[in-house]
Length: 75
Image 1 (cartoon, helix red, strand yellow):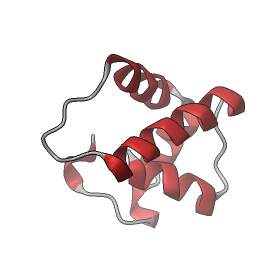
Image 2 (tube, rainbow, N blue to C red):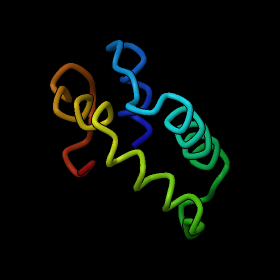
Image 3 (cartoon, rainbow, N blue to C red):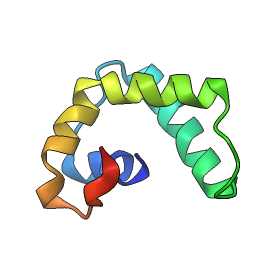
């Protein structure tokens, strides 16, 4: 998810709901930077990730994954 969120900016792709998308993206990226590999996701983080995955901008960026580095297991 982090790779997709970072690529959205460089590809000029916007969230459907910019305010909610930016908030969710900030929450996800903050947790990714600070968490340990074995730490479980909080319910709030899972909800943010579900909202992001449902966003058409995130889906568009995912469909353009040949334009940036995205692991095959990302979906």
